[in-house]
Image (cartoon, rainbow, N blue to C red):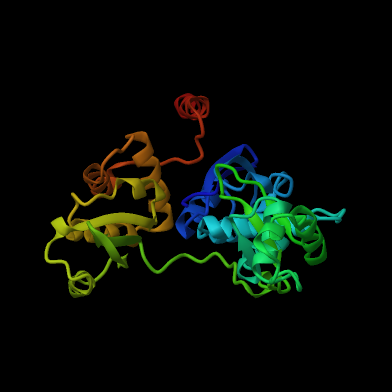
Length: 334
C-alpha cells in the first residue's frame, strides 16, 4: 500500500512534513528540522490522506508522532480484505458512542482485523439473508422446494441477523471492495504492549534487494563487511548485480533514499554508507544542508560533497540573508 497519509508539525517557526509510515531516520530527521529532541513532544496534524479518509474525524487535531506512525505502519500492511475488515470494525466501535476514539483505540482496532468475519460479496440485507439461508443459519428451510425458496424474505432475514450479531455493511469505493463485517472476538489489547521508543538504527543505510523477477527479497544493513554483502547476495541465488533490484528502505540522510538505484554497485553504496556512519551529528546536519544547497540529484554528487565536507563552513544560527548581513555588518563596524 505504501504511505497512508502526510502530516506536518510546527515548533517556534520551524516546520516539518512527513509521510507516514515513516522510517526511524525519517522521524529523527523531522525532529531535527523541528529543533526538538524529545519525540514525545512532537505533535503532527494530518495534511493529506492517501488512504483511510474515514479516520479524519479521529485524527483531526494534533497527533503524537510515535503513535501516529505505529497506526500508519499497521494500516500500510493491509490488503483489500483487511482494509474492509478495519473499516467495519471502526464503524462498529463508534456506533452509539459519544466520546471519539483516540489513537491507542485505533491502533487496537488495526491489530484486531483477524477477529472478524468479512464477506465482500454481501453489500445489503437481502444478500446477507440469502447467504444466511444458503449456509444453514436459518433452521427449517433447507428442505424447501426451489420455487418456494426464492419467496423467502431475504431482506428481513438479513436485517434480523445483522442486528442480532451487531454486524455492519462497508460501502464499496476506490479504497476497498466493501462488504459485510461481523466481529466474533473481543478487540485485541495491543497498544499498551508496543514499544514505541524511537532509537537510532544500527545501520547508516538499509537496502531491500531482490531479483528482477520478484520472488525472495532480503534486507541488507550498510555499512557491512564485503563477505557479509557477498553472503547476502548468495542467499538470493543471484549471480550478478545486473540481476538485482535495489531500493533504499531507510538512510541516515533520508533525502538520499530516492537516489539509490541499481546503477550504483554495492561497493559504492557500502562506501557511502560508511561515510555517513562516520559523520558526527554536527557533520551530518552540515552535510544535509550542503546537499540541499547543491540541489543534489544523484549519489555520485552526494559522495563528492561528502568528501568535500571539510571545505565548507556551516552556520546554523543564520536562518535568512538578513541575519547573515546583520552579522557581517557587526564584524565590519567593529
